Length: 329
Image 1: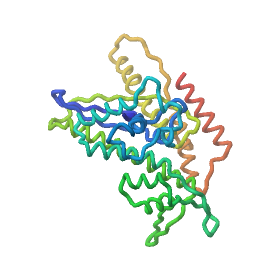
Image 2: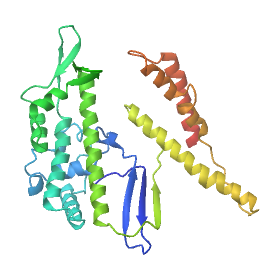
Image 3: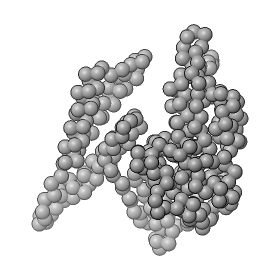
């Protein structure tokens, strides 16, 4: 149903009869896009496929998964040999077994459907009196109407704050129109936030079902490292995910290879030395003084700052690619 974070921790009591879960680094960026032959989150496809066959999702204004921006980008909306309707029934049954009542399930599916509708909300470009770029959401936007209805929020307020931002300076407050690009970024950021909240709610519900008075005695940590991922469009969020992956890889190297082998040397244990590539140069390129993060931070302090083309191509693209490829070789 969900893709867990990069690190998941399962905690057990002294009798190993109870378990709780913690998760980190949920890939919220997957809500917005998927690769050509992939999906983002299976639950979106399950509720779309079951819109005409299951009462809990029949009144959520859903359509085919290909009709929504957040689920229709890839070519895997329908997978041969996979029944999303059957998987939806299994998902609903699993939630029931974990103590989620029918109202909980209905509200949860409403939440997910609202995210799909929000992704289809579009804006129309316009201009202010001063000639600045602005935008607006049409009054008859059906997707925003569905979003507002499902979450029981005011349509006009939502329409306003998707295209405007509030700026507070001292005792003064300004309402500033956003450009179309900023408005779409705002919409997508809200979608990712909503999905993250839904994910956290599910984890809390599971932990509540498995709640015990016993304290944690042991835990199993599950670390999922894939390394650098390169997409057709690489966002800043994806860059941060890649950076976090490299830091996790370094932590793994430090404890499994460096410290462990140093312990073997001290205890004079006979073993075959494990050769590995230290990814510290890749991390230094990102976080050291005058590294990528420093350059980005400096440019953010400049109005409409842009990293010089020479720096961007030679320092960031070439050096980062070279360090990453060497690390993965």
